[in-house]
Image 1 (cartoon, rainbow, N blue to C red):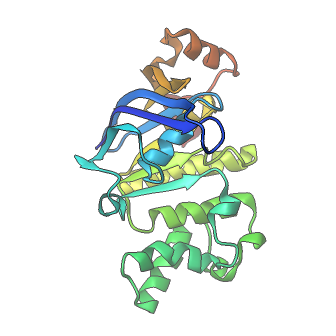
Image 2: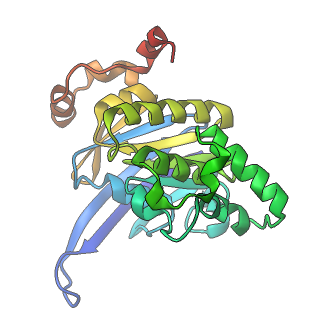
Length: 260
């Protein structure tokens, strides 16, 4: 479904007139299959969020290519209605002057849906899918809790029925109980819409809970990849260091024990 092939990305590492460039992504290649949740994990500054912006079409790679179903994601036509994103900072992801209704319906209007009754029906349905009732339609962002705001961002992201969702640190700003609620919501929505996820995070426990496969990112490179079921057998020194830095985590296989 998504193919990332030999992608490189640099940024200017000095003043505006400097030719000094910092390498952020180096020869990154991988694939995400239909219906798969691929986790990308690494420390801050490892390049993983830059990768998310490239896939979402917000930035362009210096070289290499990113293809969605065989077509370059730099084309707005390829992305629109097919690839959506949810980012860490939900507080700046919603226009502060937009109501929840305006925020969720924004992509629907972009896609040409202007029938007021149909758009309203769709927005109320989307809010219901993320656990919010119709009463939220008139609320402004400052009236929402962090968890509620991120649910609104998720409702907006799935409004066009995308096939691929980039989740860039989408739970890291939330309290632990709310993180679990959002993870369970993402599991439910993935199954409902048969979406593929790219789940970017520094939280190995969240990756193990949600994902099928994991890429370990270090200094802009993929240093190892592993199925979630094989995390205890990773070989790269950096990957093992990340795993050893957290308490034992709960994998997808263990969720069934808790009725998830």
